[in-house]
Amino acid sequence: MCTSIVEIARAEGSARSVTGWFSLTHSVVCYDHPQHALLDDAITIDFVNDQLEPGARAAVELTLESAKALSAALLKAIDASE
Amino acid sequence: MAYESMVAEMITIRGHNNDPISAYTARPMGPGPFPGVVLIHHLPGWGEHYREMTRKFAHHGYAAISHNLYERVGTGSADDVAAKARAQGGVADAQVVGDTEAAVQWLKVQPYVNGKVGVIGSCSGGRQTFYYACHTKSIDAAVELWGGRVVMDDVSEKQPVAPIEFTKNLSCPLLGIFGNEDRAPSPEQVDQHEAELKKHGKNYEFHRYDGAGHGFTYYHRPMYRVEQALDAWEKIFAFFKKHLAA
Image 1 (tube, rainbow over the protein chains, first blue to last red):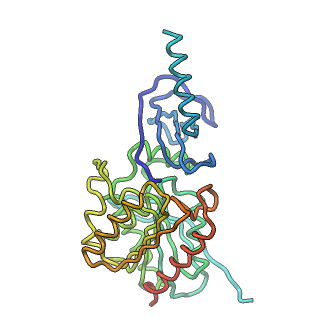
Image 2: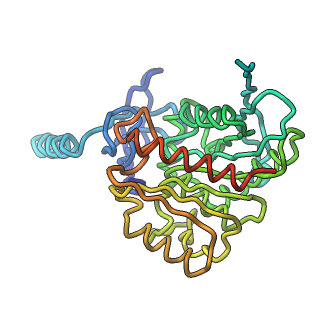
Image 3: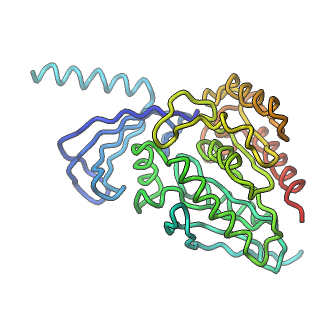
């Protein structure tokens, strides 16, 4: 499946790549081919700084079910904080 | 057993807007003449798999080149660069045409190439192969592997017109390989693609595989289907042999 499902949100915070911590500019959420997870398609989330080189990225690849669980957990945590 | 050897190396060519872009090349040792093949990499990036495909064509007697459509995105691991390209909305169709034309012309002036050049690509590269074949008169054959979004509604600044709209301009024979379990392109979209080729009297052959979805020749991914993949590779090499012979 070759999709164009890409959602981008502004992000303020930090993420850690293989070379260390960096400041974030965006979170990028896609449903597309994963690079590593053994799935045909996956929800991929990249936390990036688009002003830096492409390696400024912390990446995850999730099944749809895992992504739904993460989404629910995020909302619960956010609700609890407010 | 006959001695075998190949040359595989990175070069720089002048792509769209005369920008320098990297390209990976492979060819058998010897004077040739060899038919030429340009490989357009898929959305997951200009990485190891396309290096291997490039060498596969050299193993089969072709001079092959795979150019980096993501050169302008930045440097780093292929995964990271591909992720950044995806977040930027992919590559502009106009850039794909310019970069691919440069790869084709590079092959054509090599003394060991027989003057014939084909293009092949998978996934987004399949779409771009078809798009390019409708925007050039420089090639002799095109192979589209499960080109997603040849039929598309979500046009953008970078991809302003669906490739299917250019079918009437297709300039060379086309081989299309698709999995019937794919959702993009879906079997219905492949039907539309084929109907448009028929309408314009184009020279094409489509092979549509049951029990396979997207990317079924990718042997490092779970979508791999060995039987269908082996058959598809036979058809690809038969097609190029027919159309790229001197």
